[in-house]
Amino acid sequence: MSVNIVVKDMGLDYAIRGGGRKGGKLTALDGVSLEVKQGEFLSVVGPSGCGKSTLLYILAGLIRKSRGTVLINGREITGPALDRGIVMQGYALFPWRTVQRNVEFGLEVKGTPKAARRRKALEYLESVGLSDFAQRYPYELSGGMKQRVAIVRALAYDPDILLMDEPFAAVDEQTREMLHEELLRIWEATHKTIIFVTHSIDEAVFLSDRVAVMSAGPGAIKRIIDVNLRRPRAGGAVKASVDFSVLRNRVWRLLQNMPDSEREGAAPADSDISDVISDSATL
Amino acid sequence: MKSRKTPPLARAAQKSAVIAAILAAWWFLPQHFRNMFLPPLNEIAFSFVEMAKTGEMWKHIGYSLSRALAGFLIAEALSIPLGILLGWFDKAERYLDPLFQVMRNTSVLAIMPLFVMFMGVGETSKIAIIVWGTFFPTLIVTIQGVKNVDPLLIQSAQSMGISRFGLFWKVVLPGALPYILAGFRQSAGVALIILVGAEMLGANYGLGFMILHYQQGFLVAKMFAGILTLAVLGVLVNALIVKLEARLTRWQEKIAK
Ligand SMILES: Nc1ncnc2c1ncn2[C@@H]1O[C@H](COP(=O)(O)OP(=O)(O)OP(=O)(O)O)[C@@H](O)[C@H]1O
Ligand SMILES: [Mg+2]
Image (cartoon, rainbow over all chains, first blue to last red):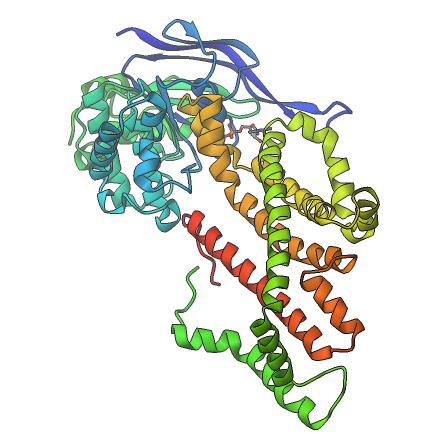
């Protein structure tokens, strides 16, 4: 598979007030390097404020990197475009548009005819169980519903790359699991590249091909962990497997600033970890 | 937040209770404690009916409303587009804002004589002064509205590759609409206030003129008929615009009214 996104030694400074007469700067990201393959599902975890959202914003073209390289399909990002979709941390639904018209937004920008737009929006709303809410306004929805609308709004105009910023943070465990399956189904059907920011280690491991663990101050990628769990991943079995908990533990240790269990040889005594990971037997 | 539903009849009763009590007091009390400056309400009502019959009242209302409407509409037609532009191209606004603040906070009544000096006491100066007085409130609120559109929404639209024009049309305008409408409503109220001042300064028709005229002639009941008519007009205009606002911003959560 070809390489789709290349980030190399990338850094970002925010201009901030204070810190000298001209205002100072805050280095949110520094020395970030990352390659994401076409069709890959990559999760990003890291402490709050380490620059996860910032990274997504840069990839979305909403803010400009301060240094380094960011290439998408070999080309520098010049701004936002319909080949990338972002689901923002706040839902950012347009309050003056009904749910359906929110989902239609990207298609409108794309110039899709009205009837096709409508059909597509309703199709997507159906897929997340919100067809009954098509004519409601965002304020009439629960937080989880808003999040689902935000997700299908980004899906509806069919971007190649989907950037998701903690999209399932506000939904209950059951809905989340349902949405996980739904997202994986869509991903497998459409071969989109997904970069998925989350605070949930379980979520990251369960969904992804790889998990990027970030560190703060300034934000950088600490380690990228391969998740060699077999797909399709049926929820219960995968999560109960040893492989899953080993990976989970690895990510957790990295987030706790403990040495990587694989590298430092701190794996569970009874198994060679690389075997476990590649074998991915479910118990 | 949803308000506890009160039946409509009870709501109407709640809303009108205090005013009804005051009107009742006004109707009965002055009949027992006579004061030449405060005639009982029935006498005022009688004066109103009389003036309505002769057509005098309608003529004054007609003049006043058409002046207020003309001035108000001209002002809104200028200030809303200009406010949108200045909010959007906010560099210019940084230079102009102090000027607008001065204009807006200078009492219109204070500069009214200026208008009379330059334009005389005819219709032009009356309408011009209403334009002046209602222009700045809407302008400033409209600029604020455009500038305050949630940046997250702008980014969200931009992430979908929207053009600058599309952003303006599909995000900035609807986002600023509640502000614009609030400015619109505020200015409508201001228009009626200034109108009366302008008519008192020199006119032969109009409610402001009428009120002053009967005050000077000690026809107090007729004066009150004019004052109360203005009050009713003010409330009606406000209610009308509130209706319009509700219709245009149905998408906003209704905080218990
Ligand atoms: N617009 C901004 N201006 C200045 N500083 C900013 C801005 N946005 C973010 N920052 C700073 O950049 C750093 C990274 O922020 P970012 O939102 O990317 O973190 P995050 O990893 O997404 O955090 P969280 O998990 O809490 O969402 C933080 O220190 C934050 O204070
Ligand atoms: Mg974030």
